[in-house]
Amino acid sequence: MSTENSPMKKQTKTDLVKRIPGVVKNYGIYLALLCILVFFSAVTGGKFQRPNNILNVIRQVSMMGIASVGMAFVLLLGGIDLSIGSTITLVNIVAAWFMVKAGIHPVPACLTALVMAAAVGFFNGWVIANIKMPPLIVTLSTMTILEGLAFIICGGVPIFGFSKDFAVIGQGYLGPVPIPVIIMAVILAAGAFILNQTYFGRYFYAVGGNEEAAALSGISVKRVKYLVYTLSGFFAGLAGIVMLSRTMSGQALAGKGFEFDVLTAVVLGGVSVNGGYGKISNVVAGILILGVLSNGMVLMNITQYVQMVIKGSVLLLAVGFDCYQKQRKGV
Image 1 (cartoon, rainbow, N blue to C red):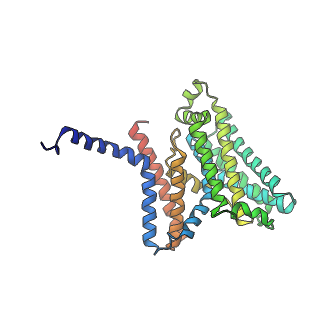
Image 2: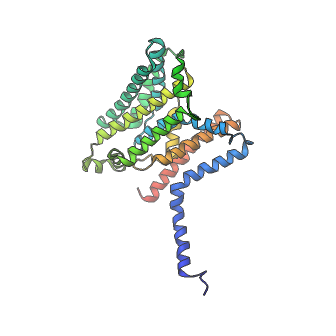
Image 3: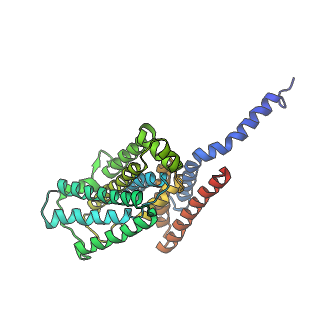
């Protein structure tokens, strides 16, 4: 007897069809990354897939990857942190000033700058949690303040003249792997651990999903916001230290616009702008997509302004898709 049209076979086909949306939802970001890799490999005449170029892409996105963990935490709460780029700039200038102008050893200079970055994040969280100001306005104000402070400290003049040992953080290698990539991997792993294995991570999702319900269940929403924004500031500061070590020059515009790339990568990685949903593993794919996209467009000699249009369109599509998903779920 033929089994081609048997109920069991029809049921199997139906189950496979039903699983397709779930597969696309869970692994679509990786399929998109694969498609972009294939596309640039085909159109750049073999330049893109060279090992040195691939390693360069990963090294270039390392600072974005470090800062993206903090932005992911903030978005999970339903907030936003536009001060990330300015925090990177201020850390660049402060750490450079300590090392070059004040003659302080790089270790205490960098640690002091990181504490300052965490303090900036805590300030954002405190204002948002206690004064109830919108995160967009608070972090936009902080962004402007930090940019002004950076210019005041350095007078708009780059600060350079570091010891060669300091360059190890941003330019060194551990075997064949660049140290910035190792730092990024450690931070991403720590971010995933916090979200998946700690009660703090569960609190992030709970507050982002429904703040009132989280408060009624006994979660200290204020403390969660303090923690999340402090971590965002700290990770931005760490990205600033890596950037300073890589360029070996404290620039007053070092982090200008950096928050846009970080936000794009995180939203592209599936972290909802409405809060309550997202995971670090997909953020990694979002970071790589943005890095590959930037590198591929440079290899294709696409102008900076066209790149801006494309990146802006990517962010718009990513947010639009997130909103569409929310509407379908009736949220």
